[in-house]
Image: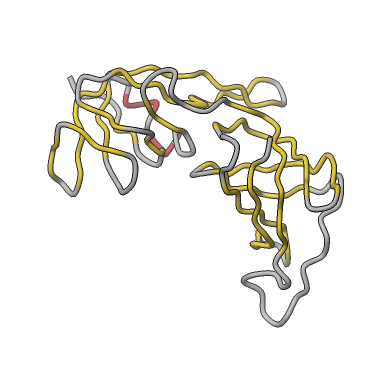
Length: 182
C-alpha cells in the first residue's frame, strides 16, 4: 500500500524501506489562538531519488519517501518544515529559541541602501529554522542574543543556523542570521 509522499521535510540519518519513522513537530492543528502539533509515526514503503526507487537514503539532497500516512496529511505541503528520522533520534520540539545573531549592514532585496535597524523587544520577525518558517515575537534583546517566542513550534537543536527576516516595504526581507544557543 502506498500512502502519503513526504516532501518538503528534512530527513535525519539513514532511512530504509520498511523502517518506522517519526515526523516532528508533526501535523499542525489550530486550537483556539495557538497552533498545536501532533507527532506522526509512519512506515516507509518506498524511497525515491531522481525518479529511481532505492532501498535507503541518507540526509542531504532531494528524496521522496512513500509512507503509510493517509495521503490527505501530505497534500498542500502540510508537512513542510518537519524533520523525519528513526523514533528517538530527532531534536526536541520547542516554541521558544535563543539566538546569538548578526545583523547585515543593509536590508537584503530592497532598492537603494536601506540600513538595518536594531532588533527591538516586542517586534515580530520571520525566522527560518531548517525548512520550517514561522513568525516570532522578540521577548528579549541583550548584546548579540535574542530570545524569541515562536508562533508555530519547530524541531531544532543547539548550533543550528537560523535566518532572520523583517517586514520592510510590505515584504519580508532578510536582515540577519543567527545560531541557536538554547
